[in-house]
Each structure stands twice: as structure tokens, then as C-alpha cells.
Length: 126
Image (tube, rainbow, N blue to C red; front, side, top):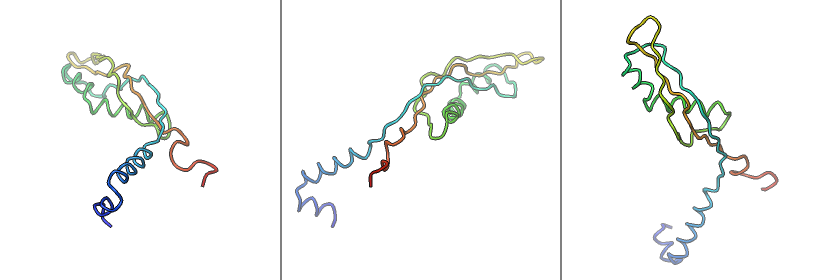
């Protein structure tokens, strides 16, 4: 039967409340959270100061390192949110005037992981 026929025969209010009840139970997963601080690495190549700053603060670069920060915590850890991009540090390259390497220090990220036993079958039950 199609949903339209089911609604007509059983009463739309009762079925709709039943569907909402089941949908509410599907998201019963619990998470563990952990805040971390980390530093990104400076690139190997030197660049002009403006280019080095742009590359260091690029969202792709930050996301890549933040993902690594969480994955080093162990299996199942993922990025929940980036709370602070940290501070930009630039150092002049040795022997190359006007060329810099920049990186971010104290990047704050929140990592999350499913709490063991919060999803799936519980030991000793069916």
C-alpha cells in the first residue's frame, strides 16, 4: 500500500505521531568529546610573506591538519568543530631575504567519537 492509502485508513494523526516517535529513537547515539591544541607544520618551500600567510591560513590547510589531530587520538575519532584557528607565526628563511615560512600555533579543535555501547546491540540482549 502507498502511504496515502495508509493515512486514509488508519488516521493521519496516529500514523504521523508513530512515525515521529520512531524517527526520534533513531538518533539515540551518544558521543565522547575531547578538546585538543595543535600546531600546523610550515611548508618546505619558502614564499613571499603574503603568499606564505595565505597558504598557512587557508581553510584546506587548517582542515587537513585538524583531521590529523583527531585521527591521532585513535580509531573512530573525528572532527566535531574547529574552535580557534590559532595564531599565525612567520619565520624568515635562512639565506633568503624576503622569503618566509608560516604556520599556525595553538589551533583548538573538538574531536568526537561514538561512546561504546550507545549504538547497536547491547551485550546480552537479543
